[in-house]
Image (cartoon, rainbow, N blue to C red):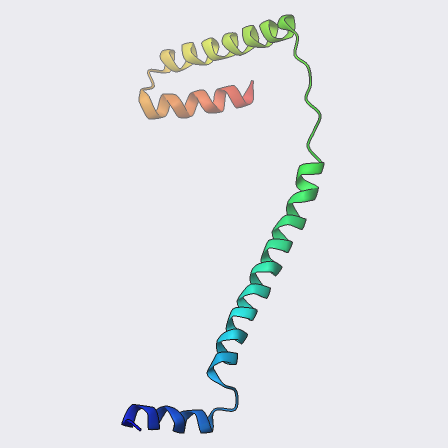
Length: 102
């Protein structure tokens, strides 16, 4: 018997579970863990998908009115920023805050 085979046999004597079963145990734990994670993710997503709000139908007249309102609001905020002499970042910040207030 080779020296490496003797060392292997010595380690096998002190090991209570053969190597095959140790590897099987590790693979089995990984499989169970993966299945548990997949189950948790899928059960968490089902209520989120089930509670989606119904889609409202939009009519062309409603879209036109809301578009006009948004355009007027943006134009008003743009003119205020121009009067204050704001440039790039300050203008963008002002526009965001102005639209949120109106």
